Structures are given as C-alpha cells and as structure tokens.
Image (cartoon, helix red, strand yellow):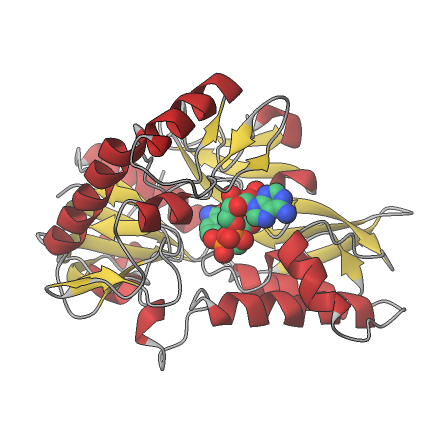
Length: 360
Ligand code: NAP
C-alpha cells in the first residue's frame, strides 16, 4: 500500500489539549488528521510499519490524555459526509465518523426524522457514539443503529457490523470492551422514522415539556424536544460553551452503576449505618436490575457541586462533571481517586470511569 509521510501530513509535537473538551494533555509525538478511508488506512499502516503506539481520536469529548502527552501516533478520524436513503417507512442515514454528532441530530430533526432527538447537545463525533452506546433522556444510539463500518487496525480490512453484532449494553459495546482499540470506526448508519412522533419517556423531560404547549406536527414536535433537551443540558453545563468554564469537562466522569437488587440492598444497609434516613435515589433498569445516579453517590459521599481542589474541581451545575479550571491531568485524576475512595467507603460501590484514559 503506498504510504508517504507527505501524503499523510503527519505533524510532530502537537498539543493534545487543543483536541479534547477537557483541554488537558501534553503533546502527541506524532499526529495526523485523516479525512478519507484511504488516508486512515495509510496512517494505520504507517504506525504498524514503524511499530508506533496508536491512538484513534474522534471529537475528544471522552478522552483524558496524560500531562506528558502521547508517545506515538494520534490519528484523528475526520471522515465527513452524510447521506439519506429512503427505504419505505424508514430513512437510513449514513454518516462519516468525523461529523459532529450534534450537527447530525440537528439535520435529522430539521428533516422530520425521529429517533435521535433526545440525544441533542452531546459533544463529540458520530464515530464515537457506538463505542459507548451513547444515550440520554430515554434514547440510546443502539436503538436506531443499523450498522457500523470500521477499519480493522490489525488487518487494515474494512469490516461491517450489524447493530446486533455490536454487543450493546448500557453505555457499553464490543468497541469499548472486548475489541477496545481494535477498530477505527469510519461510518455509522442509523434507521430513523420520517414524520415520526417523538416518544418522550424520561421523567425530567416530560415534566419540562408538560409546562409548555407541545406542537403536534413533525418536525415541530422534534424541534421542541431538541430545544428542551438542549435547555436541560445547558442548565447542567453539559453543552460545550466556551463562555461557560464549567463545560470544560469530559461530560459525566463516572458511569451510573447498574446493580442487582441484593447489591442495592447491601448498599442501602451500609448507607443506613451512617445515620441517614434519606432514601437512595434509584430507577429500574433492564430486567431486575436497578440504576443509581452516580451523581447522587458522589454528592452523598461528601463531594458537592462547585468543589475545587487546585486547578480542577466539580462542576457547580452537575456533580458528575469533573472540570479543568486551568489545572493538569494529574490533578484531575487525583480528584477522581478521592471521589472514588469516598464513594467506596460510604456505599461500598466501585465507580467506573467513563472517559478513556490514554497513558503516555
Ligand atoms: P439525570 O437525568 O439526573 O439521571 C441520572 C441517572 O438517573 C441516570 O442513570 C438516569 O438513567 C437515571 N434516571 C433519571 N430519570 C430516570 C427515569 N425517569 N427513568 C429511568 N432512569 C432515570 O442525569 P444527568 O447526568 O443529568 O444525565 C441526563 C441524561 O444524559 C441521562 O439520560 C444520562 O444517562 C445521559 N448522559 C449520557 C452520557 C453518555 O452516554 N455518555 C453522559 C452523560 C449523561 P439513564 O442514564 O438511563 O438515562
């Protein structure tokens, strides 16, 4: 395969802080932006030939780089383009991995295509959404995903996975678990409902919409869901906004724990022993499982919104967002460890981190 450095426009010593929403991290030894399948394949081949460590980057909204940077090649997937295909009662939307997820949501809402409107305002690229099966306000990307196309980092072959082959679970997929680092996602196809009626399942969203006159037709109804979700997310500083220092984060830093009923009862008994009679907030999850908001655990373990330590802290709008106020990755991870310890000591719960931590 022809691969020249010039063709790939590989840059040296590129500050990674410019490529993450946390704005943290040292320099990438090598960095390349790939806007086509061919250049992406060449970049992967280049890394393999030179035995370079490789990190595939999307929008950088869920990535924490070390203060030392990355001693290898960072490949940013910038493959663009969106196409819409009418298949009768559905529309298949095929989108390049490098498109901004929220641009895709906005254009689908404007076309009256239902299925991802509750996923408005989520930062990051389209290609990143299947990796952690992004979900919010009652919708998950796995519900509408038809297929994912990806380059196998080992064989450099283009492979395709149907939705059922992606191993989707709550904020999880094969790309995050057993196949972590194996595939570079290049394209995602979703199946959306033209003229679809929004299905509002989430209590917080329902409450907000009930207080307003809800329009009947599509896309008006979809637009109104989108602006409601954007409003709720903005209130929690969960929409990237350069004017809002609380949004300099990687969104939720911890996954909401999903537990068996026996585990939940054990946690409840431990919580009672602290002398509190406040009930633990929880929701039913799939099957017999229960979900506890991680933000509730963080706050009740003593870490309040607005907490600051050095150059990092907890967002004053949301206890799950760890924010960079001009600090370092080292400080951020120390804060994460303090929170994890407090939650473990108070509740016996081991929090799982959501962002990907990339070692030097
Ligand atoms: P929130 O709305 O206060 O919810 C916190 C937790 O409570 C979540 O586990 C949520 O479940 C659950 N919950 C709240 N109301 C529920 C209901 N009516 N039925 C079932 N479960 C309910 O939390 P937030 O942090 O501000 O997040 C808002 C939404 O954005 C949530 O859906 C959250 O999952 C999502 N989010 C997703 C990501 C991601 O995919 N990476 C990152 C940040 C936030 P669910 O998680 O199942 O919604």
